[in-house]
Amino acid sequence: METGVRTPLVEMFRRGTVDVDIRMFAARGMLAPRGHEQLALLVLLTGDESADVAAAAEATLAGIPAEALGAFLARGDVPAELKAFFAARGVTLPADVVAADDGPLVDVAPPVDPSASDEDEGSALQRIAAMNVAQRLTLATKGSREERAILIRDPNKIVAAAVLSSPKMTEMEVESVARMANVSEDVLRIISTNRAWMKNYQVALALTKNPKTPIAVSMNLLVRLSERDLKQISTDRNVPDVLRMTARKKLVADKKDACRDCTETSCRIRVPEVDQAGAVRPDVDLGRTAGDLLQDVEADHRA
Image: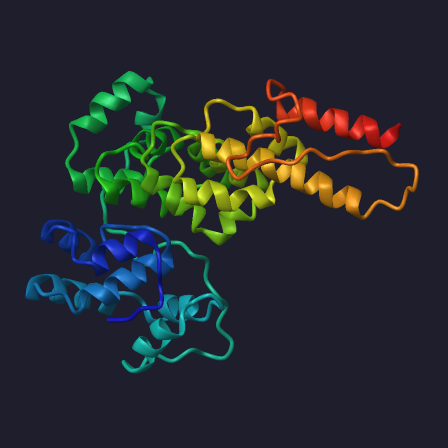
């Protein structure tokens, strides 16, 4: 069934890789991610191969107050597929309805213990390790920032995806996760596909500098970086060699383009070339860094 919502959490359910107990957990409204994801999951689960799961999803949808559902569907970012699904069921949008926020429409999961946020990381790790998947999913969407920082490293992909789908997740947290070298590549890839998060320059920079980021993602992000950050990456031994070399090539190419447009007839700049591997041509000192090289280029231009 098509919902028009394309998020990693929804796609895991769509592909049929989620265990039936977790599908039932979501069908009952106990998984509380952002509203558009929760509604897409419930719609998707109405067609589940398990009759019990499908019936639970139908019951949960029927229990959503018509006013709340209408207010959510009035949002401009709700996919046409979701609106068509409910329109076919007779749900109409009042003309004077005020659009709702993107919080979950249903939340019947047990509340999270607020006192747990006061414990140290070691105690939190032990407590979370003793939880089953359903309990970790609840905590992923409703827990504290510290608990999300632990759960984002969970080996179960659906738990990590639920953290990123939490309505409580902030851009500051996303930036912090993008810097982590101990999260899975899938987590970093999910961040890179979120347009809202990728508008934040610091998130894009953190992903590019993270050695765990899939190389195809970090390479595509190079074009967004400032010259200063490119210089840092061009000498950073923690990033993959191909990324470092590409950053170096881009710096030299950008400098060459700038000088090609230069109107100063007295400019004596000689821009070094680089080969396909990112190495400076043989008549230039190979032991020098890209940063040193560009400093000399700028000095020659000013002379």
